Image 1 (tube, one colour):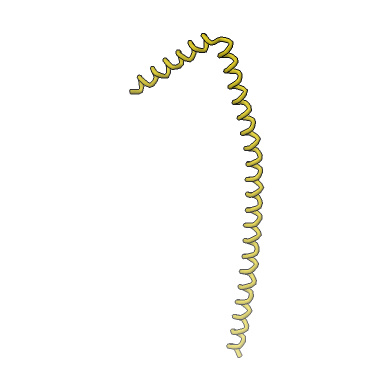
Image 2 (cartoon, rainbow, N blue to C red):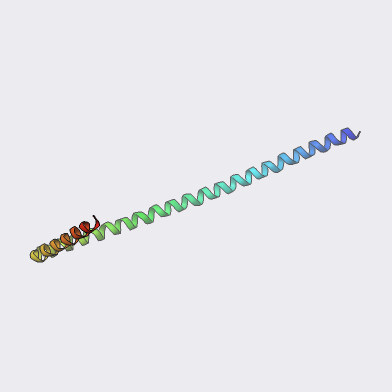
Length: 98
């Protein structure tokens, strides 16, 4: 009789263990699903923001290029002297590095 009780207790324990394990699996899946959705939302948000910032940076670069072209056309001699001076400074810097 004790053996039968032990068998029933073991079966109940195994069944309880399986039930609890299944609950843990479901909870882990739900946590993983929520993490995936949160990460996916974050990636979408980052893509949208980075696209916006990229457009702004591109626009700013184009504006700077236009202003530089206008300045060079208005003052070609000054632009030439400034670029020569910049070249001299850069060349001197590389000479010192050697």
